[in-house]
Image 1 (cartoon, rainbow, N blue to C red):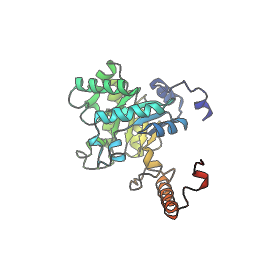
Image 2: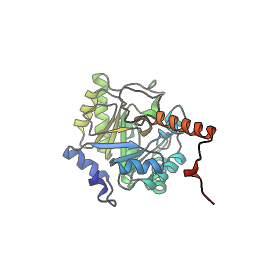
Image 3: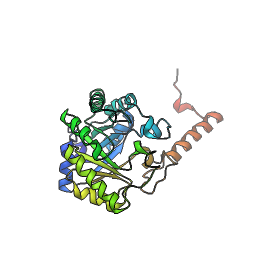
Image 4: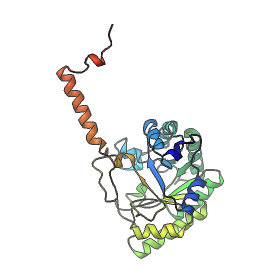
Length: 275
């Protein structure tokens, strides 16, 4: 903690993440969607803050990430940036913001970078998106990839399914990872795959892999903040470890507030201004 907070002006960079992999230092990544949580996770010493398109289901109550828009990502990215002083800030490219054409991808990613102050964008998919990644990188936009279960393709994949369970699937993941690295991606998220597949991909590339349900051999790990804090209580996948139970705590606090208001004990003398 002290190392992170000792130099408030020093920001984590994409090159620092690559160096961390080379030196065997694990990368810590977490999501955030507002300035308050952005500041809290940044002060806790995380390396990367992701403003994910998971904002659609987690914050907006949508069924999937498909509903997220460029405007939403810009709004949430901009306010998270106000709280993040140290970590590398990455913003997701939402569904259909990069899939239509390369010029669209550059325009949308560039707008997100300009209007949020983010240091990089993230997009989903394998080798087929290598030309798009290369074009973004050539335009000066750092790109984080995303392989395995890709939430924007949830309907095509038949639901929330583990990817790379068999040898051919794992080999395809390795090929995709190499294609993303060759295209210029500086790192990639690996989601919902056997630990053996996560390890194989991590070994096959020189850029960092950040796992979520992809085993312990990845170069780092990411969780959705609201999931790991116990705020999203209905979401209980095998890979998730809860580090807090804030949902229970919030209900208890609000219930106690209600009890005291109804009983007339709040506000009491300590919370009342005297004339």
